[in-house]
Image (cartoon, one colour):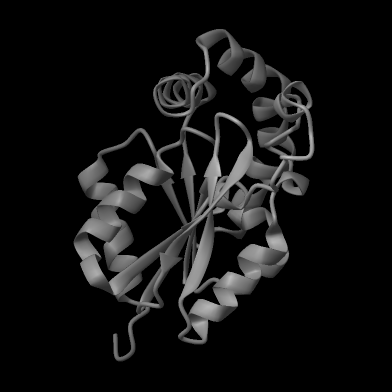
Length: 201
């Protein structure tokens, strides 16, 4: 089991995409972002005001349940989350157990019970300026946000929670990568580290 953590916009997902492309059918991925609590019970304005960068915003117990199921060889049904409305859609995404299980999320290394399940913990670094620029591009394109709302959220919760929870969790990493460095070199380093975990290596 491989965990990739780091600030929002650090480059985790790019590395995960590259890794899964290399490993093909040997890898499955869980995104911690898929495990936000369902906020259907709250009015829209209250949903938008939730601190989504605090660990309490995530359904840690469901993620751990799914991880344990996959490690036991059982497929799981991951909730599909709508980031525009901050609610679960009611649909699920089936994830199959495979030799390599990747967990991606800013708080992956900040959760003790999750860390204990990892065979390899990776932290991806990037400056605040780069992370904000990448987050803005993603959230406007994929999550129905405006540039001003992204900046406001980054200042109000993303940056402060990064300082409190995300950056300190880097001490638990077995491997640190520069998310602004050469992608090919980072991917080779990551693939080599994963291969060393294989039996007989």
